[in-house]
Image 1 (tube, rainbow, N blue to C red):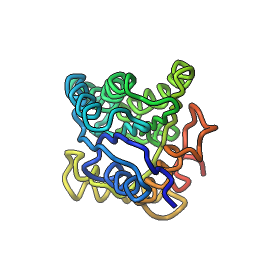
Image 2 (cartoon, rainbow, N blue to C red; image 1 turned 135 degrees about the vertical axis):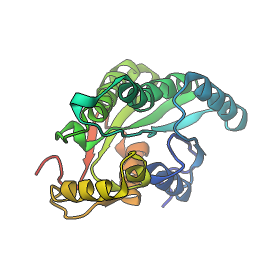
Image 3 (tube, one colour; image 1 turned 30 degrees about the horizontal axis):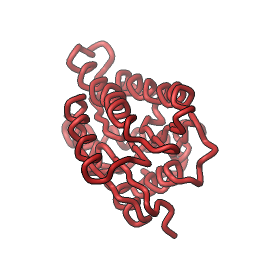
Image 4 (cartoon, rainbow, N blue to C red; image 1 turned 180 degrees about the vertical axis):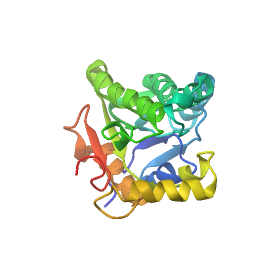
Length: 227
C-alpha cells in the first residue's frame, strides 16, 4: 500500500539514522522526498525552500528531524554546549518550519523529533533534553497557531535507538559502550530500537491515517519512559 502517493516531503537530518530510514520508507510509499543534513541556519533553509518551489512547487509533509547530542555533567555545561544543541535541536526546527510555511499545502503534516528523555531524566543530558522539550512544546503551540492553515503538528519521541548519533557524542568508544549498557538496562523491551521501526511511526504521523492527531507526543521507546 502506498500511503503517501502523490505527496512531497522534506526531511531534515536525513543523511543517516532515523531520517534516512524515514526517507527510504516514504519513497516506498509513493512520496517525493527532499533530504537535507542538519544545517540549522535560516539562510540554508531559505535556499532549500527555493529549490523545492522550483522542482516540486509545494510540500505536504515536513519531518524536522535534525538533531545532535552533547552529553556533559550539568556542572560543566558551558555556552558552547548550550549553543550547539539549541542551535540545531530547537532553532533549526524553528527555521525549518518558518521557511517552509509559505509552501505548505492545506492540509499538511509536520512531524518534529523530540526524545523520550523529556519524560525521564538521564544524567548528563540536561541541555539535550531541555532542547527537545522545547521542540515538544513547539508542536503543541504550533498546532493551535497553524490550525486555520490546515497544518497539523505532532512530535515523535524516540527512546534508545541504534543510530550513528552514539558515535557523534564526542566520547571515547569505551565510554559510549558503557553508557549505552547502563541505559539499556532501563529499557523494559530489553533492546535498542531500530531506525526503521521509528520510521514506521513517523509514516503514520505524516500520513492521512493520523489526520485526527494534533499537538500529540508519540513515545516510541520500548517502555523506557513509562515503565
